[in-house]
Image (tube, rainbow, N blue to C red; front, side, top):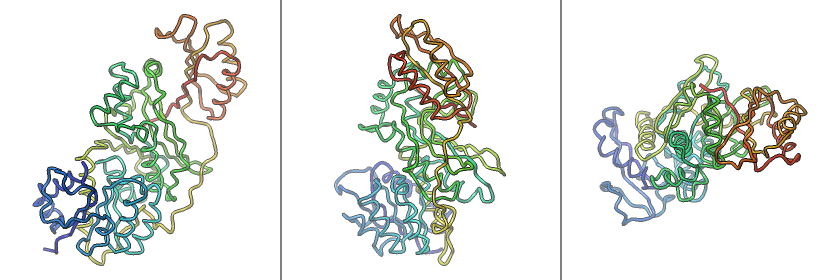
Length: 437
């Protein structure tokens, strides 16, 4: 049997502790599968005294993760610190430069520095594995990086944040407000004390930027993602969507067009009969559309200690199975030097149309004024209805519009026109309707 693969782990939080526990409990099975043992030789974390409920054995302790990353005591550096800079970046860069393989669950780091780190990894002939960075335990990275060779990807989209999906699921199933569902998510540990990263789309955007690079062979460009969160989704939107045959999900969508690549994260209405509409709670799902395979949907646990640890262990096992002198594949499916510059697509018609909810004063001429503003901006309406809402005063009504294909710019101009006419009571709600798997 080959020599043991020496593992160093930086970060012993929920995921790090789960990785250590899995390595211990599954040692014999992992050794059988990989043909060599994986042994924990070194660790680093902020607090030496904390009881993490796992046996660290004889692992050497490093107070400085960068020192661990450079250590000759390890073959693989596992980064579970988090953050797009600081110790996480310094340690991963140091490990790669020292010729160590790296496994990370850090989507923020890869979204910001992925191409630069990939360049170092490929120059040094080592692996940079990151399955746990996107959609937890779902093997979407391996699928896109390895299994879809020969396929031309046209679109990748999905539910990539369990916190947001949990909130939207509870709002629909139990009729609760966004605020109540968020509080419950925080109580259960699904949402942080400051939930902004999850509910406003940042987490999904980081993951989407990585998938975009894999799908289209371009450099990562997280700053070019249109982003909108779910904090303004109300029960009125949830009910109206249901009556129209839709369900609201926070989706990340990347697709190739004639003029470039479009990336966006926002609440989306998907048909209730679609597969992705059946993804509830903290579950994640990623759909990939290709020319050869067609549509592929991967779904499963998207977060949590065990799901993320499973992906980390899988990445470690891939390294254990590799052999010295083996030429490793490129980090993002293509050599980093050959990743094309990201080209942002021009604004174009949205294939699924839009849902628009306006709370307006209930008076004569409002419908006509709204219809005129839509016509002035060449927006074709599939339907326009007055929607009763028991929560509104008698002199106010919700007007629900569903458009045919149109552009974001046209919708925004039309809505601004209705606001300028003085008919609107408060801020309108605009949600894209997406064709979905």
